[in-house]
Length: 199
Image 1 (cartoon, helix red, strand yellow):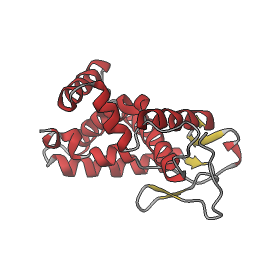
Image 2 (cartoon, helix red, strand yellow):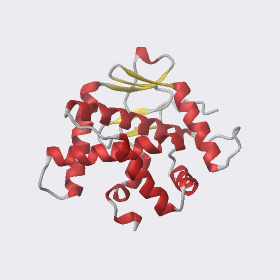
Image 3 (cartoon, one colour):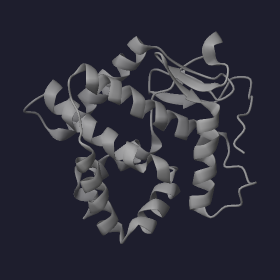
Image 4 (cartoon, helix red, strand yellow):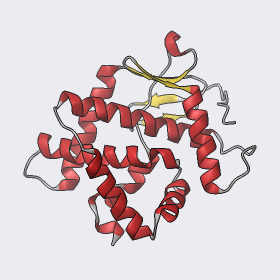
């Protein structure tokens, strides 16, 4: 049932995240910068800590650099899509997000099972609603940019537009965390193997 919904068809992409970029001198204290908007290192550490709790892991354990890159990518994607949607005069009401979450909670059997499932996919509890909002905005972007075609193609067009929008904004990530790979909109490990702190 869950896998038949538009949200679920792209769940792996939504939870894994995409879109992060290179480095710059303005990154002091920031995990990433999107245009003029900063994502702080503190925010990233907090999300990693929340993910550990949701997974039932000892707070002192490390989730690894890949988890940090995935969470940061997810956060950047959310912010880029929100900005792209503003530019395209598209919006999603909080009631729509709440409705989507309600459907998922019913499907999974409650809030806790949904949180546990999201955590198993690398998504901290505090970012679930952001992922749902992003997915709804991507759907609307696709419908506006490519009306009358299949939803899957609309999503491809929307993500292509978002990638171009991100490049225009200028997305930079701390070199300690990784580098943006424009070809597949992902974060690669840093070339010098520097580590990001997640505790």
